Length: 273
Ligand code: SF4
Image (cartoon, rainbow, N blue to C red; front, side, top):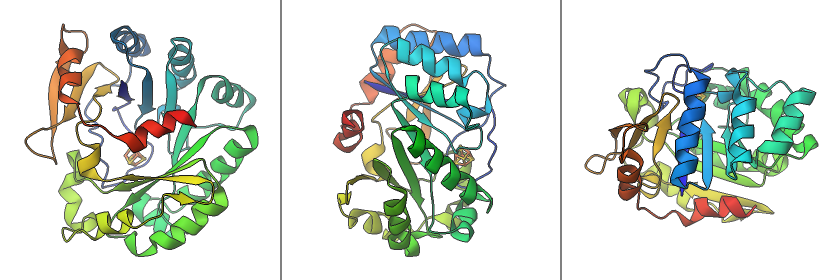
């Protein structure tokens, strides 16, 4: 069983297609550790800690340590801005993080910057990836495919090949949450995004290519916010979330996992790296 634990207070980037609902108060890490405990006691085996950027908070280090020491496979998703490339972050990542996801959305700073709303972020991401490789962290490069960057997907693949992560995760744009309001800018309703992803190879050399189409990701995992709210993709409308209540209420996780019955074999392979 896998769950996402998201920090949903704010982010240090402002991608206007973003599907994270930033509607919550600043994290109280004592609460977030209780959230993690609930997930562990329920029996999850794999956790993705995402955001926002979890590494915005000093406490991300204690959180990944607690998750790893609870026996979980720990996948940390970050845009890289909060990573310090310091000895303490090196030790934390090497000891407690099994897989680190970081975005590259184009072959150069102008395309990547267009997607991320910040041209300087390209250089930050490239530098972080090089540092992560040097220190031996297993890397997953995440690419969101939208109307703005689909035409350069092959060039992006060439850059990914040079950066040499273990996995290249390619995501179809999904008009969810606030980012859904901008779907005309990012989506191609004629299906060209899914089509471009589908024809990618299974491997780029040694790099496994993970193709993440919206309908395949739907209802495969519950999402738990840092304050404990649990939600899933709606069963009735693929472009909506459905809240199930607080993780601290009885049977909420049970209902969440009963809804998340979709099988996603490609994502399960992440745990075999
Ligand atoms: S897509 Fe990621 S980096 Fe961009 S605003 Fe959303 S959480 Fe932040």
